[in-house]
Image 1 (cartoon, each protein chain N blue to C red):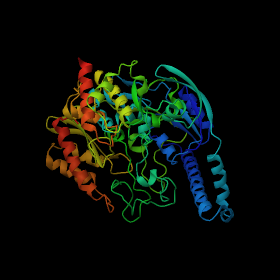
Image 2: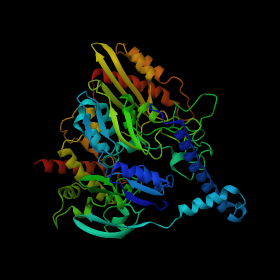
Image 3: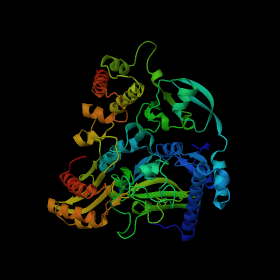
Image 4: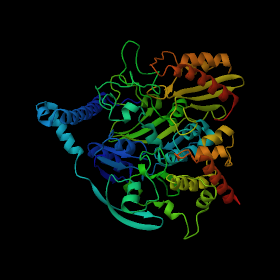
Length: 234
Length: 336
C-alpha cells in the first residue's frame, strides 16, 4: 500500500473523531433534552457544541430549481434538495402510479425507468435525475393501447391488491430490454447460459427479485412476464 | 434527513475542489447506500457533490491484460461487460449475486467499495449503542442478536471487540481474491491502494472503515491480467435465494497447470469487517493437487482464529464447507 504521510493520516483521524464527538453530543443532547429538559442539560460543556451541531442539522431547507423530463414531458419545479424522484413524482407532479412501499430500496414498488434502466426512485434524488429521460407506469401505454407487459399482467392476473403492480410492470418492461441485449443474471452463470440466456422461470424469478409482492402473486407475475417475453420474441 | 446543498461536478478536479472546500460534504454516486442512510439519519452530509457526470465510466484492458474499471461504472454494466465476463467471470458472478437489478443499475464500482455495514444496530438509530455510528457508545451486537455478524477480524480473544459488523459487499470479495488495486485522487494528488489495505479492521476505531481519506475520490479499480478465468467460482450462502446479504460467501480462483494449482485467490464475505482474503490459504493451495483433502486443510486454515458469539457459531462450519465447495467447483471449471 502506498501509505499516506503520517501527518495526513493523523489529521484524518482527528477530523473523523471530531465529527464523531459532535455526533455523540448531538444525540446526548437530544436524549437529555427530552428526558431531563433542556434547562438541566445546559451546564454540560459538550451541550453547547451539540446545540450548534443541532442548529446546523436543522438548517433551512435548500431549495433548488430543476427540470424533470417525465414520459416525454418537461416539468419545471423548485424542490428541497432532499426530495427523492419518487416524492417529486407523487407529491409535486401528482403521478401517483409509482408507489412508496418501504422507501428504502428494498421493495421495488417505486421502480421507474431512467434513461432506459430500471431504478428505485425512492433512492434517486430528484436533483440527480435532472437531464434524464424518465418513464413511469403512466408513460407505458399508447393512448388506450396498453403496453404488452401491462396487457400480460391483466391476462395472467399478475396481482392481487395491485399496490406493487406499477413497480412490477416497470421492472418487467426493463427486464425484457435487458434480456434482449443479452444481459446476464446470477442464474445465467449457475446454469451456464451465458450467451443470450433464455428467460426461464428461474431467470424471471431472479431478475424480478427486486420487486416484492406482499400478496404473493408471484406465480402469476412470473406467468405474465413469461408471456410478455414470448410475445416480445414473436 | 438533514438539509444539504446539492451540486454537480463536471470534472474530477471539480469534484475534489468541491469536497475540499465544503466541510461535511460527501460524494454522491448511485446513492443506493448513502441516500438510504441519510433517510435513517445515520449519514448527515452538509452537501452532496454529484459525481454521476464524471467521465470515469469506461472499462479498458491494456495489451498486457491489466484491466481498468472506471469508478463510475454501474454494477450492472460491470457484470455484463465483455471483458469482465470473459476474463473475470468471478467478478461478474459476485456482482450479480448482490442486491437487485434496480440497485445494480444505480450502484457504482467506487460506491460499492464504500458500502457500509447492514448491522441492525448501526442502521437503526433507535439503538443507542453502536461504536461505528457513535464512537464510545458500545456495541449492542456483541450481546444482542448477532446471527449475521463477524467471526473473523474483530480482534483478539482477550479483549472485547469494538465492533463485530460485517462488510456487506459481494463485489469487494471478488476484488480481494483477484487482488485489485484501487486508484484514488485527492487534493494532494493521485495514489493507489491495494484492496487488501483499502478496508480497515475495526480495532479501536470502527467508524474509520477504509484508508480512503474524506477528501479523496476513488477514480478506478485496476485488475491484474486474468489468470483465473477458467477456474473460478463465487458461492453465496444466504437466507433467501436472491436479493439478500451473504451469511457466508466465497470467491475462489485457481490457476491450474495440469493437475497442480499454480496460483490461487481465496476471499470470504459475510464473516468479517472487510472482504476476508486469506493469503495463508492461498499459499497452501499453491503447488497442491486440487482434491477434497487439500481443500479441507485450506478451509481449516482460512477460518483459523474464528471468534463466535451467541447466534453466529454456525458460520465457522458453514464457511469451511463453503470454501471446500467453492474450490471444488472452481477446480471443475464450473460456473457460478
